[in-house]
Image (cartoon, rainbow over all chains, first blue to last red; front, side):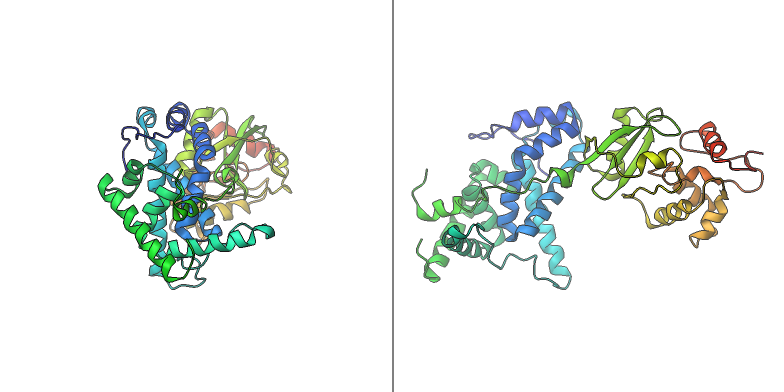
Amino acid sequence: MSTPTEAAPRADPDGERVAAALADDLDDGFAELVRTYQGLVYAVALRTTGHRTDAEDLAAEALLRAYRSLADHDPAWLRELVPRPWLLTIVVNTSRNQVRDAARRPRTDGATVPDEPVPGPTVEDRAEQAEVTEHLATLLARLPETQRTAVVLRHVTDLPLTEVAEVLGCPVGTAKSHVSRGLARLRTLIAETGDRP
Amino acid sequence: MSTDPVLVRLAALAPAEGPDLTDRLFDGWLTTDSLLGPVRVVCTRDGISFLRTTADLAEEDFRAAYRRRVGRPLRASTVVPDDLEAALHGDATARPRLDLLGITDFQRDVLAATRTIPAGETRPYAWVAAEVGRPGAVRAAGTALATNPVPLLIPCHRVVPSGGGGIGRYIFGVSAKQRLLAAEGATGVGR
């Protein structure tokens, strides 16, 4: 679990408000946290697991873990919390645990490893766009885990590098390197599969 | 804004909208009346999970107790579950759905056995222990009942010491236990 840190250069505009709400009343503050970040949590979960149902389960599980951790801290700690990277660290760790647990037990439904295309937008007239999106998501799922997480955080959810580093638990330079290697690998995969960029 | 087509397409991988997880994460609590006066009750999506009298726990303590027990956030609710009010006023035919969270299998068995004791009757702690197949675990059965998440709905007040040991303890105090048993017409207790 990470500790609160100084705000990043491109600081989360909602962070202070959510932290103050948590310090004021844990349950009301948590409702504010969920409203503020559940879209982001779901986006990271979706592009990490590769499946919508799994993503929803992962997002809910990570948020409950976050709640239990918040409940262990006093208001002074909560007020200093930088919620966004802290929360995404829990999402990434929860996802890792689930993948690891899944690897330890026999696969029954094949639903926990991100090796299948994610369904794109469901509206029919966006089918072509969906196909392109699915294809990129599939290629993304083929990246090594840390590179995939780095690319998702930086380029899908547009997190500043400082926060990507905090979530990955590494120096900013290392995070930057994970992002560039991930992108390079992704470009190679795009070229190999004959997909136009 | 990047013009690199790969980066543009990556940015488009963020789902336009995700599910609202609030209903899934939060349990609802409300205040209602009972034979023991006002009570606060928590309902999950699957049933009633916690009940305490307002006299026993202030709102803040009630929420903290629930947080310690099950680690789930609470929000105020106005939706009263079916059968709850009838059950809290002694209607034996009203059996609201329960969702017993954060308890052991042994506690679950003890509570299930206790729920079968009819109004107007009592059973000794030893009966409950025997009923769950652990006849030696009389004290543990008593402990399990002392932390009953849903008193009144699971009538732990109907479990008493065997052989003239008074009516035993109760989460909300001995006099509350006496009042409930008297209201149900239970005989032969407290002598």
